[in-house]
Length: 319
Length: 285
Image (spheres, each protein chain N blue to C red):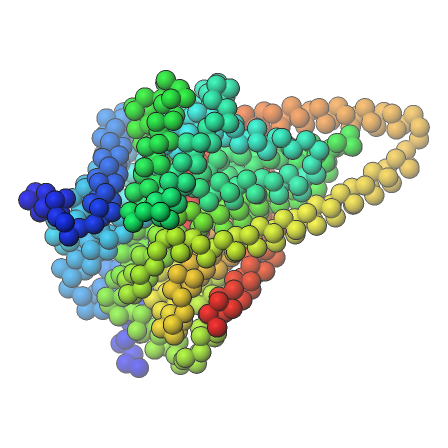
């Protein structure tokens, strides 16, 4: 606790970091609220698993910084256990009805775009004009949007916001933790020296010190790995450690450009693979199409053009 | 190279094969992590320590939980209805133009992290009926083949716009993952820079998609015009009137069905649409 108070009083910690820690505490509270509501939700068959998952997640956000990281590691394991055993689910109800949404639209109309856009606008304003993290700006945008929504309609009480955020968390479920868990996997790879092994292997195949070849292998590798795995987030973790860093970034290429565009090269792979069922196969079912690959076929030409365009963009900006 | 070194790649093999076999994603990641730690010679304490340190320093990737405080309530207050009204302003556009307009709206809102439904929540209930109506403006029913093509185009523009749009959002999960991955390798990059380099990419992607899909749409409309001409040339004068009536009746039925479908899809969307889309979005394209 003393460390906690010290952190917020310390002059050595930037205002941005202090505020960001407050944001994490708020996120923790939202997750714990979702966990507790699930615990008492009789319509949720998996209420205990769900409660453990969301409450531990919330706890990790609130105390993660203040307890030894070995304990945090243990808590992460505790959190994922109910998810692995499929004991995280959702209860019934809570969705707005068609009539409710239509009535609210009739009342509020196009003004709804103001709170909807406030998060992005605030994140951008904070990023460009302050020294405070854009994520604090985004949170500020949430507050602004929330106030606007309360002004637009009296029925938007704080409880409505909390229950709706619980509904959203329940809908996305544990899979929403994928990026964080993949990043953790990435750091385990790095700590275990996986990156060195890959780059030793790849250096036998591609010439070292040639940034153009490095970019092409990294970008095409991202697309292919993503097609196989069905997930660009998984691919970027592996390939940045193994190829991006040793064969492109170490040669002085701009890390923001290369890292960011490599991810969208992976997205080109997503557009071409049935492995990304959420985007390419589920829509076929929703739209009642006859050809299972009907969506992918319409995306392949665009994906290939964009892959080439992005490789050219990275090479052009680097040379 | 020492062959035992190759064992360190076991974790990667587990990830690739596991995802490809559609096993439980979280299980794959945890197994790959444990296996890598074991073959890499990390002791349990070091493993837990790395896991914990990484989680705490990557908490920013869960900023989406903060956005949820408002997104569910935005949906409740008619966000999707407003977006539909915006797209419906296009009165005399072709199906290809309707898809393009939807793509532009989708990419702009994706850049602000606003999702109004995706295929389940928006394409099926709003975009498809509009495109179909645009084709049937000549009072003939759309052919199944033509409709199937339009469905592919509409789902395609939805994906392209969403993928390339969300990386424009400062604080989106893709940018945060790249930032976290690069930080682990000793490169510090800002979220604004990660988003800024994507602006030209998104512009080019949208131009490519819009041009390609409008070319396809025109080709479909030319084929349709030929079929209609051939049909009316072969039909007798009296037959033509009957045929027109039959087409109109069929079209009415289609509209009715479309309305029913729209209502059903909307319901489904609030149950799964935004969620599935978001889960997928956060889960990684």
